[in-house]
Every structure is written in C-alpha cells, then in structure tokens.
Length: 309
Length: 281
Image 1 (cartoon, chains in turn orange, green):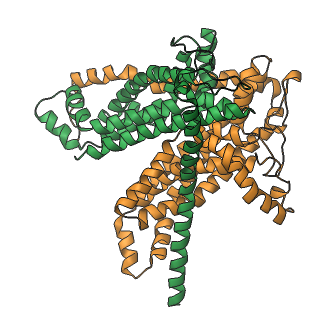
Image 2 (tube, each protein chain N blue to C red):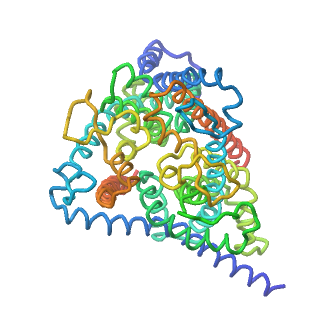
Image 3 (cartoon, helix red, strand yellow):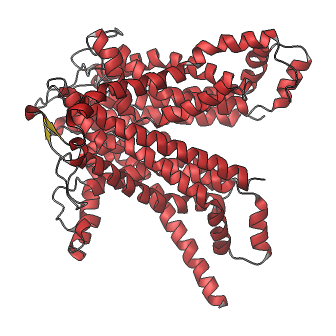
C-alpha cells in the first residue's frame, strides 16, 4: 500500500487521538533520564573524579568511591556473556540444525520458559545450589591447579564471588542470547545451506559457514546480553558476596553497581551524599546499557538488511 | 583425510549435544529443586500458607505469606490495565503510521526503555512518586511495574499487529472502513490470540518483578492491606528478603513462596501455549 494520497482529515484525527497515550513511552524515558541526571549532579560536583578512581563506602565520614562496584559489574557481565556464548551457540545450533518436529518445539518451549522466568527464582536457586556447586567443582580445583594466575590466586572461602555471580547471571541470560542468535541464524536464506550441501560439505562445515555469515549478528547478540547482564540485580545481590573489597581474584567476594544499590539505597537518605552517589553510579550503568543495546539492535537490523535478500 | 572429516563431524555433533544439555540442565534442576523444597513447605504449612502472616525469625510456626500474595495481586491489578492500554495504543500508532518520525522515535524509545535496569526504575519512581507522596505505597510499586513492563507490552503488541497481512487492511479500506474501524474490527480480532499472549506475558513479567519494587512498594508484611496508597508487599520481595536473611525458618518460607511464584508463572506460560495452539490462521 503506497500512500500517494495525502492523509485524509479523518486519518489525521485518528493519529491525533492516538497521540496522548502513545507519547507516554517517550515521556517516561525523558523523565527517567532527567531524574537520574539531576539527582546525580550533586555527587559529581562534590566528589569529581575521585568517585570512580577509589573504592570506599563510608557514609559516616561521607567518603565514597565506586571503582570496585563498577569493575565488579563489568567483570560479572563479561563472565556472564562468556557463559552465555558457550551455552547459547551450541543450543541454537542444536535447535536449528539437529532437532525436528516435536523435540524441536519442546526444546524451544523450554528456552522460552527460561526466558520469561522471574529472576528472583534464579537468585534463590543460584544462592542455595549453584554457588556451593561451583565452589566445589570449579573454584577450588582452578585455585589448586593454577594459583599463580592472578584471577585464580585466592582461595574461595564462601563461594559467593564475582565468579559465581558471572556464571549465575550468564545462565539467566542464556535464553535471551539464544533467542537472538537463533532468530539471526534462521533468517539466513536457505540458498547458502543448499550451496554448502551441494558441494558436499558435512554438517560441521555447513554450520561453520552459517556461523561465519551470522557472526555480526552473534556479536550484536552478545553485546545485548552484556547490556542486560549489567542491570541484573536480584541474582547479583544473592551471589556476588557484597563486599567493597577490590581484588584481581575472581573468587573473592565483590560488588556490582546494582547489588550496591539494592543493599545500600534503603538507608542512604540518612546521609548527605549517599543517595546522590548511588544515583550517579546507576547513571553510569543506564547510559552504558542504553548505548550498548542501541548499538546492538541497529547492528542486527543492518546485518539483516544485508544478508536477507 | 576422509576419516578425519568423519571424526570431526562426530566430535562436533557430540559437543553440540553435550553443551546443549548443559544449557538446559540448570533450568531442569532449578524447577525440580524449587518444587521439591517449596511444595514440602507449603504442604507442611497447609492452607495457612495462603492466609497466615509471615513468622518471626525464631518462631516455630511456618506461618504464611498472605500480605505478599495480596500485594502482588493488588499491584498487578493496578498496573496491568494501564500497561496494556498504553502499550496497545503505542503499538497501533506505530503499525498504522510506520513512516511517521514519531513512530520511529517511539520504536527506538521502547528499545532504550527496555534496557534501563529495573533497579534504576525503582530509584526513579522513588524520587518521582515515593518522596512527593511521603511514603511507600502499592501505587508507587504499580507505577514502577508499569514502567518496567510497558516496553515489553509494546513489543508484544506491535509484533502481533504487524503479523496481520496488509491485504486485510486493503480489503477493509476497499469496503470503506475507517482506520479506527480497521484496527478495532479487523486487525485486533485477527491478531486476538497474539494480543492475549502479549497480555499474559506482560502479566508474568509484572508479577515476577523484584528490583523495581525494592524502593517503591514498602515491604509491609504485618497484615493484609488492600489500599493503593498504603505500603504493600509482594511475593518476589518477600523471597528476596527472606532468602538473603540468615534464618533457616525464613529460608523455608522463601522456598515455599518461590514454588508458589514458579507455579503461577508456569500456569501463565502454559496458558500462552494453549492460546497459541488454537490459532490456525
């Protein structure tokens, strides 16, 4: 339907009647971002760069530094994305290439079920089962075998650590990343696969060609996963160990920005600067998350317009 | 050469299967442990689990989670209609006028809004609603839930409306239907099942959200209050507080509440599957 005709008066009226309610999304975003920016201005003025170059949380003395939670957020998200990649890519290949009919619909449904599951359920399970499991079967063996690598240099004490949080958040974003990869993978035109099989390629060789075609979309899916992992709160609080201590070791307890807020914001109004510092910490995360997800989703759109003829 | 290719093929298939199982295993283990741990707690507490008040940390009784159940129902009831209405209207606008710059903007905004961490939403609503109202309330919680769920609702509805072939629109215009008539009498009826799925998925998101309620709802657990301006509790909030507490009794209550939440979520999820199954367009 090419609209060569000018919109009629009734169309305009229809458009106008939809306006007030639909613009709410726009209004909410603007209001949200301005609120965070305004509330965080104070801390930037008062603390300046010291805020992101040191790591202390001492409201009684009004000294704050956000280095540890920011590093913690980046480290857990990076680990989460790595976990998600290792699990999502095979899962997508499995669903797209190996499963047919009923089995395919069952596995896709399970992935969907995981994707919509409230994160608090993951948090409960991760804090009670996953963390002890990882401590025994991953952290302790790694520490014993490779204690000279700084990342594994400390002995896991409780298990609640950056490492545990990264894996737990990674498991929770597997369905999201899988859905994105699968969508990209399945939108590659049939002719590429037919061409591969036509020259006698095996399944492995075909999958390799398909993956290389989908690479930009897969990277974009991982960027989107990173953005989602950055904002994850409940799982982070339950597994990261909540300590302001900055360490190069993955097995030491740490903090993420959202975990810091979840545990400190409730009492922050008692102090002069604690609230505004927390707002500035979330500002960093919000800006990064919006920028990354914007970049990721435009990359996917551009990739699709190029590959899908 | 030939045999190496064959071996590699086998290795590849094996590792894909192994890693896929590893990807699915956590959720199966999760469902099993939540139900085993949680249903025993619910069975022990009996009906009191749904009508009683949460126990004190050192009491002997398991008590119940009535305030949290009431709070979740209240806040979902407050938030869901608004979310659905706003999301649907925005989706109608962007599908009917896809080239309009405003539609392009709304689409981009929905994406950005979805990427704002829910804990940030909680802090925003704290500043915009809780402070002016001088206290936590179910209303503030519902506002936060709406902001969190709105971009998802919008995405579900715009996918639903866009899945209707444009030939239907042309047919409707050909019999001189207005745009509004086309949307309400042709598009939404054809896409009704996807719209229902969208509503259900939005509901699942609203009732399971934790972080958005941390600084808005108020965690009032001493009784069942059904007033929108009074502090309220929700099931995820109760789980969050109790599982992070050091008390064994509270852990057990948290397991019970988790099983209840998972059950509710799975019921909603199965409902979406049943709704979709009926559709044969």
